[in-house]
Amino acid sequence: MLRLGLLGGMSWESSVVYERLINERVRERLGGVASADLLIRSFNFADIEALQAKGEWEEAGRVLASAASALESAGADAIVLATNTMHQVADAIIEVISIPLLHIVTATGEAITRAGAKKVLLLGTRYTMEQPFYKDALATQFDLEVVTPDDYEREALHHIIYDELVQGIINDDSRARVIEIINRAKASHNIEGVIAGCTEIELLVQQEHIDVTYFPTTTLHAHYAAEFALNGEVS
View (cartoon, one colour):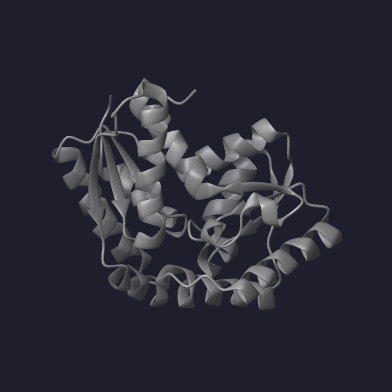
């Protein structure tokens, strides 16, 4: 089994789900008391969030790249960045490591392609929904049409993520709000799927809550990483 270097704490609410899902997939494949071989670097998310809020993405990239390099030096065979938003600085990480970065957009795009969807709604932080790094990768690598909510809805989602979900608050009214956003997009844009493009969103909304195909990025990315650990590649 290969060793995964997990960059987490962005937030820890979803990072602990990553660790559980990776270990569950390894045990499912190998049986008995088998578990994943993990190196974990968990950040104080307050520090990362402060860099996000100030738009200091270059500095954030340096911080994460340094941590990824340290994980490689400690024996990691691949890096798993346990967050959607911070994949904005994925290139900075890739530049300083010689092992693979298992990219969340790749895991998500391949799942969407397998499902046969072509037009999807992207939900996430304002950074993920408004900046091009995520949408452009899905469009160019997987030929997907990606739509996002309107400005008012993006602000509401951003508030739900940062003021509730990353603080462990699961609010039924917020769930209803997210479902309303999804239903409006389905009616107005004829979407064929929904990307939970923030790793905390699936703490609030699951497939059972909506009637369009759901792509939960935490689960998809964690399983993608586990398959790499087990096989040296992703099937």
